[in-house]
Image (cartoon, rainbow, N blue to C red; front, top):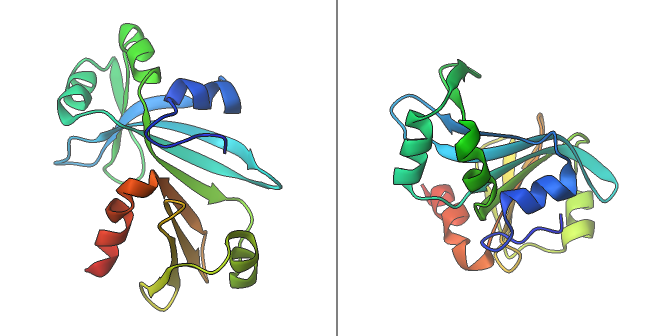
Length: 169
């Protein structure tokens, strides 16, 4: 994507993928939430899809952004989207990217994954539908879903444990 987690900023992503990228604090009930940027139409080579970027900001900053939000709206279920005040936007866009999630519009299969990314360091079957292909050297967890959409999650390789640990449970 031309972005490097822990180095690139949300603003760099917006310059690369379009000014219509949205930014907000996204929070489920009882959670602080996360500062996220969203693009509904991103091209990654020949594959288009949706991209969600999570900012690397501390909980206190997220809480403050949320408290100063100009409005909030329901998303799926009980998750809420908090729209930032104009004066908070500049600071938010300059935040570094902690993680990248890409949901391709096209379904991927095992052969495509292996030809594009090579053999994973590890494969973990989450259930009958989902298998995770783990590439710690790339900071990538690719969840291959036999009946739904694939999800590619990227972090800085040194932070790969953030993606791997939840799969151990």
